[in-house]
Image (cartoon, rainbow, N blue to C red):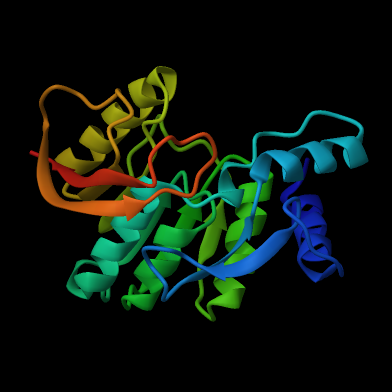
Amino acid sequence: MSTTTALTDLEREITAPGAGPDRLRLVATPFVPEVRLHLAEDAILWWARMEAAAGRPLPPPYWASVWAGGQALARHLLDHPELAAGRRVLDLGAGSGLVAIAAALAGADRVVANDVDPYAVAAVTVNARANRVRVAVDSDDLLDGVAGVDLLVAGDALYDAELAARVLPYLRRSADRGVEVLVGDPDRGHLPPAGLELVASYPVPTTEPSVDSPVRRVQVLRPR
């Protein structure tokens, strides 16, 4: 699917009349109320309805929920705007675009939100528009290269072992080239035993599906 088609689908979804748990709504982010996002009350129901309409499988809509790691990282950037102000920022695995939007609100010179899911790229576009900030989008797989920015941010990018095995070396290579790297992670079991140091810790309300606690302790980390 092209990013253009995905954007058309999401624009139709957010302007369609009606309500319900399978619809997208523009809401304030629980831990970062300065940012509003188009989210699904029940992302699984939204996914099922969209797949039924498309008649084919669609990628899981990770962008339709706001994840704990991204919330902590976005909060950290807004509370410490000097981290992003005047800098080139890359949001890796951007999902809804929450962290990218926070970087833009903090005064970044240029923000790029990267995600390989066309719907996530579309979500970043509509969410940046809703928050009146400028965020460029990139749908390429960047993980075999090195980030060419001043600040690389990754919220909840270590959610499975296979992905973490690619993301962590990318973060390290970028840090070794002088890029400042910040990771927001609720410790889903794929953090390395060494190599990252704690910057901050936040109790973040959890809104993503299938979570058994209303609050998660989320760490903001950087490579040593």
